[in-house]
Length: 260
Image (cartoon, rainbow, N blue to C red; front, top):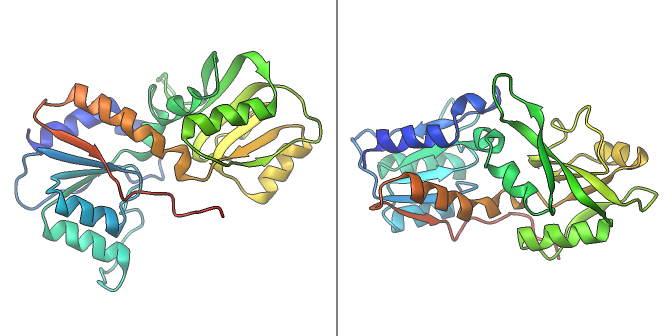
């Protein structure tokens, strides 16, 4: 399948106009030589180890959730791991695409997947995008209120984690509403009142403010709120693309934070 056709399909799954204005999404490395895609590798972070995995597997296209090219580059230096990774991918004629916040915002994307692990309830968009049913963050109103402990157990199971960082409010009140946002969600939570906030990371003062106002905070680390979506994304792509394309999830992609 031609690269152009794959990119068109990706844009239909997660329209780039849904991405945040500050984001850098889309085709970030467009190979010099015309490209047909038969192998796609999915990853959250495009590290040098993931790039080596892609090259060893003769990958044609890497779909990296986080854009490896984010800020303007004035020079490429092989002594820098990020620069070196980009240089290797260009040298090997491997394309790189990033959907990032477009995939967060779209219905059926990362945030909806994260919401699916909380239990039965009504899901709505926290920060709607005008003229769209999509937007950043989700608010889940659970059908039945649950204790904080029960909610954390559900999240651990959904994300495949043994531990979470939890800041409990002074009173152990039942949780009926959960505001969530993959990654770093403080901006999406502005002006939103919920019994609990779920995200990957949040600053000390935002956590303190939430708990003092009677809300619990659950943090699962930035990429742990995103990585579990990749197998679901692979299924979406398999259904949307040519049957002849091999789609795999990186084995070297992992959260850099380890809790001992």
